[in-house]
Structure formats: C-alpha cells, structure tokens
Image 1 (cartoon, helix red, strand yellow):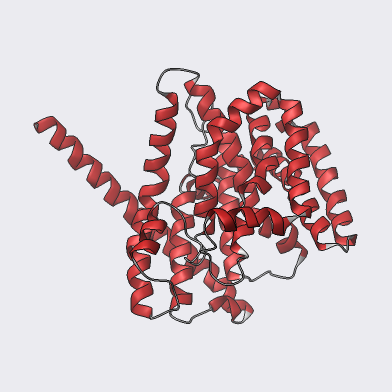
Image 2 (tube, one colour; image 1 turned 90 degrees about the horizontal axis):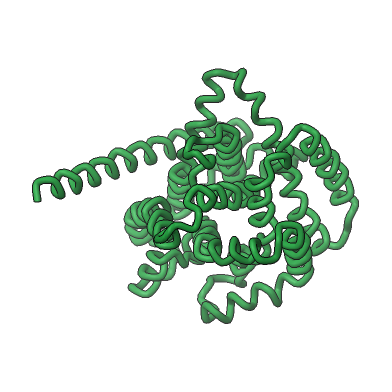
Length: 350
C-alpha cells in the first residue's frame, strides 16, 4: 500500500491507483461484513489484502527500475519507506495506546509492548497484523529483487509458486518459525503467526515483479486467460474438501484475479468522478487503511461491534469507516505538510 504507483518516468499509473482504491474499499467491506457468506465476498472482497501484496511487488519493482543501480538507491528505499509507512503508523499508535488504556480492554501493557509496536511488531494490536507483514516485505524486497534477477523471472515464478503452495500444506510448522523467533509473545492460540508468515505470500510478490517487468502480462489476451484460470480455479476450489489444499489453491488464484482486475481498470476512464474518487482512495490507501483500522479497533476496545448488526447497519458502517478514515488521513496529511514546511523554513533561516 505504501509504495508509489508510478511508472518508469515518474508519472503515476492510473490502473494501479484505481485497483488500490477498489482494494481499500474491499478492506472496509471485510471489516463491516455486509456481504459475508456470499461468493462476491469469498472470491472477491476477501482477496483485497492479497491484491495489495501483488501491487506492492509491482510498484516496488517499478520504483527500483526508475532508480536503477545508482549509488544510494538502497538507502533511499529504506528511508523513503520509513517516512511513507512508519510515520503514519506512529501517529496512529499515539492514539491507539491511550484508547487501550482508557478502555480497560484486555491488551498486554508495558513499555516492552509499546516499544515493540513502534518497530512494527503488533500481534496484540487488533487488526495491525498487516503492518507487521508489509514491513517484512519492505525489508526483504531488495534481496528478493536481486534473487529474481539472478534466477530469472520464469524460474522465480515457478519456484515461488511451489514454495507458496507447499507452505499452505504445512501452515502450523511454518508459522511456528515465527513463534520461535518472537518468543511466543502473540496472544491466544497464536493464529496470528500464520498471518505474519511472509513466505506464504512469496508467489504474490514475485508475480507483482513480473507484472512490472512484462507489460504484455497486462494485455487483453492475458486478461482473458487470467479470467478463465480464475473462474475455473474458483469452481475447483469450491469442490475441494481438504482445508489446507483449499487455502493453497485460493492463494494461487489471487494472482490471476489481480491480473484480471488490472486489465479491466482502463474501463474506469469513462467514469469521470468515480474514477477520480477511486484514484484518490488508491493514492491514500495506506492512510485510509490505518485510519479505518484505528476506528475498527477503537470500536472493539470499547466493546462495540457494528459488523454484527443488521444488514443496513453494516452498510452504514462501511460508509462510516470510509468517512472516518478519510478525515483522519486528511488531518494527518495536513499535519505532515505543516511539520515538513516548518522544517524547511527552519533550514532556510539557519
């Protein structure tokens, strides 16, 4: 979510912004649950986060292609991600932790937990799990990109597909790796370790790199093939009974779904204001994600769960999450501009 959707020349790619906009709306629908239990939810809405991960691989590789191998690229990568991702996270945590203490919710407290959250380890902070996941990929991406360059794109795609599917067949031993590395500090039964386990998304990130490097993979013919693969795969998935195989197959289907949607995105050019609105959601997707996450978690900290209300209430909750997240994003953006402006003025006067 945090990487810029830009092409080699620095201009934004509208298809990426539109799809990011659709995906962030999907996250709102996941949390508000108005369509849960439907095919649209199971095979579309519920795939919003995997779509974001494919787009992360795509936009990140585009960033590196613009930078090339110039000196300082690695430092610029990490410095840029720190500013774009972690400063908004710290701002949200500055609100989240006081709410947790005031609410008296059952949340682990203490300086150690707060410090861990500041570096992105958040297994006990509601829906912050995606922050921990995406930070792993930010750290790993330069090495992954170098590995893809060395192995070649075709071999990398085949290998990553096999790794991803294989990991889904052994989720408990795989996630126990993180349990060990983090000294079993997650709450409850430790299900969060599976969500954190970044290698299960390897296929998605490598596929994103492929989409960035081979423009024809986003052509109409490829889109039609991706649609056939996705719909046939979704039907096959619905017939499977083994939950581990089902999980692995669905993860593999996230790539043809993303390709299918990317190919369909140019149609939004005809939609005028709707296209502009989706693009705005896409460019602000990280802020909107954090904003809706704060609102959703705050509800639960104080014992509220609007997603369990009536269907009209759930749809209203979608609108409330969007409006609240947009307001928080605008406030955060204004504050950030003010801070950087003052720093600039200070630098000039000094």
